[in-house]
Length: 194
Length: 269
Image (cartoon, rainbow over all chains, first blue to last red; front, side, top):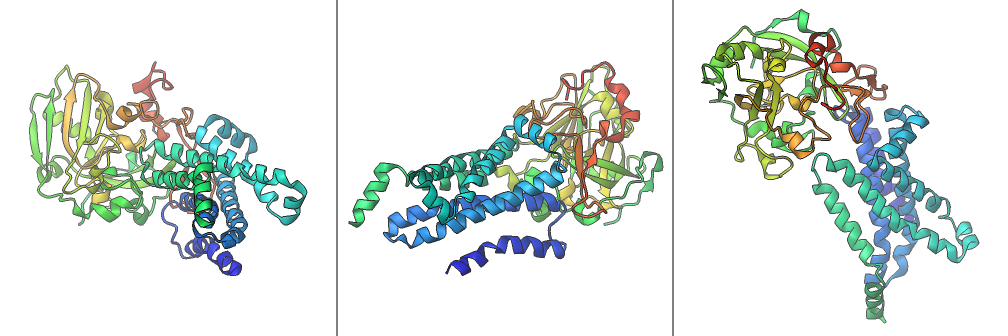
């Protein structure tokens, strides 16, 4: 099952490569790739955050097995998203990049999301989990912060055009997923099963 | 449908033109949707005949002209202009039209006229994008009278020797090559000469981002990105080609800079 999910999660990347070779990326290929990888990073973030609600609703822990892989794919697409921006928008000029990060709130939020995702990706293995013990779960609460910074990144990017339909949908989905973490709701769902 | 036009080499860049395919499928025309692909997909519903444009306000001879009369008002020229979008991309497009000054001289502006307002069609039946309140409809743009009279300002009916595809602002639009693309209003129905500076759609939305003048200026950043460089659509060097440097007034400083002498272009962006 994990292998199937792994292959499915690579389809967005395969698609971009395929479109790249068949001249299918449209008039502004860089924008297309940047937006596509950004969107998929967000989709995988939503999927990652859906595993706990699914566990609470179905009373099955099977979902938790896939959480790490989904989270890592979110990080993977976020890295592609960031890498393309750094290469083709900033021309690998780190000074220019940091200037943009400080100056422009939507980039600040995008960059923050990636920086916060990094320790989560690095500590996603069993070894780190054992080593960190209880602090591991505390560290991984950062994903709730990332949900907020990621959506702000997208929101402020779209705000200039008042074009908030799509980003609103993601915001609502993330909000609902985060609501499952409220102790009252969580406990009610847990007790319903026992 | 072909449009016969004589090349005006004095007003044309020799840069590689952006392919017809890109020019006609990557558009900002919010009346047909906010995605770049939306106008090409949705603008088929736009009826460009019959079509009239009224030129009104502070002019000696206000007139409503049928599109066919407008087409014959002056000889058609082809001009290859750079087009720089405020979003950071650019194209090189062969437009067909004639100087807006020809039309303005025809209606004879009064001495009190200081500005020219352009109003685009806003018809819910033909334009599905009007359902969303992205900006206030109808789309309104404007120029100072001297900007409108500048020989570069083109009243445009075609591109690549054909009548304008609907998604590019058929049947008649304005092209102001030294300003960001949104200043070049599409599908015009009214041209009004006024004494007061017109309220334009985008600066009503957020004047910090979109000022009345909006001259292409690499030194004045957009709040969310630098305007120092731009990505040329369909760059012949391939999709991973680096961005190119944005030029002051989009490379038209010789023809237009004198109009802004003494103005702080950071303030009047």
